Length: 397
Image (cartoon, rainbow, N blue to C red):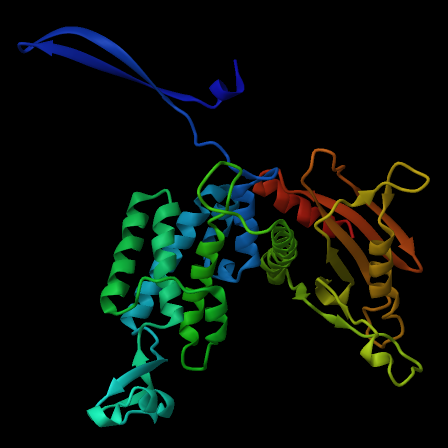
């Protein structure tokens, strides 16, 4: 039996054919129901990238008891995120959406705001009893609300549930009727609109809206949308892998009294230096630091979205020397700094395994009392296997 037939499910219906009120015959109709195909970006299933995006965002905090469901059925992530977004938008509408100010330029018969002297003189408005003014208007049509409205429209297109799609479309139309324009807002515009003390309630809604846009992943199928440049794609996937691993360990370990932190700055143990060395000496910023419960140890993790090995000068395969020097510096530069965990810290170089030629590796070495592990995680496997791999790697430390 072929692979495609193994996944097919068959439903058999007995149909009666009637003519003039009497049954003529029974017919068996076999309907083949085939699950939708799995889309890929490279060799990584899109559903796995959805899961990585969920871990990389702060939205996983809002899942509650649905965390297990997400790992078991990652295909439901868009529906789940869309439902959470709809809940957040409805909550904000009940509490009133956040208003903001936008700059307007209008010709008026009286002064409002400040006078635009250049436009007033150039168009000789004073002779017409008018004046050009620049002022700020209080409005609900803010970049933040426009992004949420666009996210609802986008969510309606990518979810599988018809009910959730209708709900998202309904909320988007409701925002438009309230005065939010349907034109999209760029991420740059949204970054300029920071959260203040009085509008922190919007944070969850905006985080979910950002995640909806991220979930619109391109696949290798032909389509009208152009992908961004390959170098930007590579940077994006590297950043995603790092943030996803950090988010995963935050979700899985904090409840067990682990301390999980990202972007920790380490300092050189400088004894003497020239006057200008501070301007050129690079700093050290770790990707992930895991402190075991009861200060039993520390694991410094550096993620690399590259192959763990390369061709060596005198051998077919070799670990990349630059990566070894980096993790070695992270560990040994902290000896004697007074922190109780610095002397017993171990290092982990974590790489993905996504290409057919990538070999799964889990090897370690102890150098000057610091254990350094080199391991890979296979992102082409199902989500539960990825979760098991990530937990197994740190247990082995």
